[in-house]
Length: 480
Ligand SMILES: NC(=O)c1ccc[n+]([C@@H]2O[C@H](COP(=O)([O-])OP(=O)(O)OC[C@H]3O[C@@H](n4cnc5c(N)ncnc54)[C@H](O)[C@@H]3O)[C@@H](O)[C@H]2O)c1
Ligand SMILES: O=c1ccn([C@@H]2O[C@H](COP(=O)(O)OP(=O)(O)O[C@H]3O[C@H](CO)[C@@H](O)[C@H](O)[C@H]3O)[C@@H](O)[C@H]2O)c(=O)[nH]1
Image (cartoon, rainbow, N blue to C red):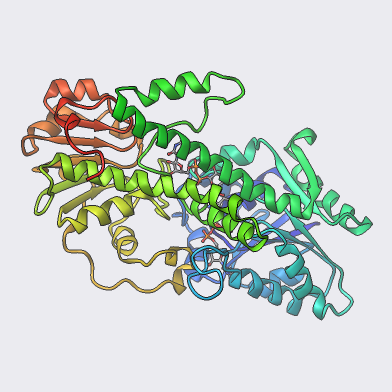
């Protein structure tokens, strides 16, 4: 029986391995992690991450051919194929701080593999890593290889949170990069045969190692660039009376452009886009390509601009101050159908409002109060370290309350910000919300979830990203 071990039981390692176990009953899959609470949660009824469809997959295979364990060394030693899916945060100190990937966790995993292995291994990069990481990993593994043969493969993951299970069941492509040697090709075939259990052959792409590593960074940069492009246009729509939804639809109808990923928003979030673009920028700079680096940097600059533009809209519309005013925030996760808050634009928006001394009441169907308080207190990039290594949060923000109901959050509020596109926000009773808010009552829709005309009929003053402005907002400066 082929044995797979995955180091890192996170958003990628957990769902990816669960699907491999489901689709390949003859393979034993063990997911290991240094975090005991995380492994305990994977072994419980309350999985550590919320992902539609995940519970069913785990329930079917856990205890059959899917196992979760903290006994990292034992399972690494026994495995034929080792996936490494650990954190690759942005460096906060030293050379490349604020841009380069911090490979501490990857390096310690590689050293441990080298220490405990007694048989040949295929080591698969599942984490997103800088180009040429495989070369460094190879050096660590082969430095004291005791005659063991290691083949390194790059197999970046393209799943998106909230749709992870669907993405894994029907991937647009699976990408496998390997060495162009006989052993390298054999290893690529071995991994290909795992995916071939359910992925059509023409969707499994094989390349050299560096193409696979770079394709992952490039794909995320292209995706994020589309959002920054439509968000840049949203600012121009507001200035001219055009409607960004109409513009995006018309633009996306061109089959060369396509309709997906053109939703204007308060900004993109999530653990990947910013981190991976910063990483790409750093690699360009290190390779003497400052013009290319600056091109991609602009994607992040527009994203930051979009978030601060939103905060400025809120403050300037509400008579240039939100001091002491109650602002309801609906949605804190970085997108719908996940409880993940890493790099969520809600953090920046809340910081902006707190900077103007607002009282904030937050409701998100999947994010706990503890998580929100930790996020607001955390330093930049600290979120991307294993939970038990993150700094413990100091005192909670007293101006922030977290409630479990949208109506409670909006009661007596002066303004309401929609920051995540949860479906339930589309069908709230906005008349009831209006009746219970202070007047004039403001809605700032950062996700284009509500129908602005219907809300205006109720009496709200409405700002929706990239939509024609309410008469009230027309004379206000876009960026105060
Ligand atoms: N989240 C996504 O949607 C996504 C998608 C594609 C790729 N990625 C990439 O995948 C990688 C993992 O991302 P994630 O979101 O799953 O992160 P995560 O923080 O959810 O999970 C990483 C896990 O690795 C564990 N870990 C760290 N060092 C370890 C070690 N030495 N031994 C054992 N366990 C260790 C941590 O405790 C943590 O549970 C990152 O490189 C990320 O960029 C993420
Ligand atoms: O038209 C759009 C699409 C997305 N977003 C925002 O962009 C962010 C990222 O969304 P999405 O890409 O759907 O989720 P992620 O889970 O971050 O997935 C991205 O990052 C992963 C990690 O690398 C990759 O594997 C995926 O392919 C890539 O889509 C979220 O804040 C979304 O709200 C928009 O604002 N407008």
